[in-house]
Image (cartoon, rainbow, N blue to C red; front, top):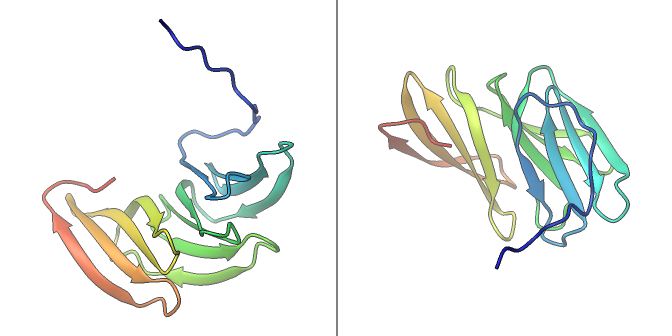
Length: 145
C-alpha cells in the first residue's frame, strides 16, 4: 500500500542548488539558496533570518539549539553565523582552493565536519567548534559530499 505524504510547508526560495538542515528541536529549517542562508520557522513559515554571503551557498548545518548556522559553498568558504542577528562568528579555512560540498555538526555541536574537494581528491576536515581549530583531515580518493 502506498503512503501519501503532503507537504507541511511550501517555501518560495529561489535556489539553483543548495542543502537544507532541520534543527534538532524540529522547529527551524536552514536553507542554502544561491548567495543566501535562509533560516525559517517550521511552525508558520516565517523567515527568521536571511544571511547574505559573497558566493553561492551549497550546504548548511544548524547547532543543536538552532542558535548557530554553519554554511559552505562554491566561494570556498566556511562560515558560522549567529541566527538571532546574522552576525558572522567565525571564518573557517576550507583548504587551498577547496569547493565546500557538505558541512555537518555533531549532536552536541562541539565538533563539525567539512566535506570538500581539492585537486580532484576528497577531504573531510574535522574542527573544534569552540576554538575553530582544525583537529584532523581525512583524505579520500574521490570528492567528499
